[in-house]
Image 1 (cartoon, rainbow, N blue to C red):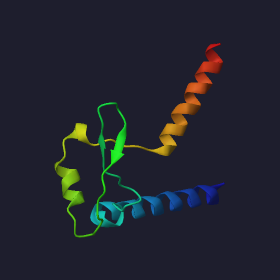
Image 2: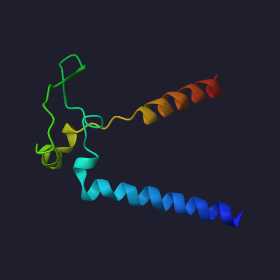
Image 3: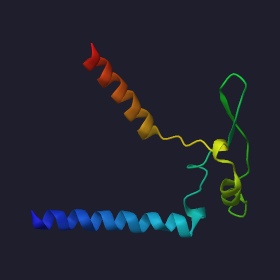
Image 4: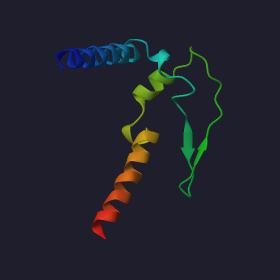
Length: 94
């Protein structure tokens, strides 16, 4: 059992150490796969802005200087979890 917890601690420390690279080198985590710039239309839909991606662009500084209401975080994991919890509470409530 002690060996299992040691392995979990090693894995958690490794994930934390790798996560810090995003703080020191944001260009490693701000890639076209992780950042999508879009504008919200009047009807509530989002349309992506075409953007030529280079590491020399100032996307990181644009994100730092943006107003908090201009940045929207989207996560598929959290969306799926939200749908799961809604379905769970609907079944419990009936």
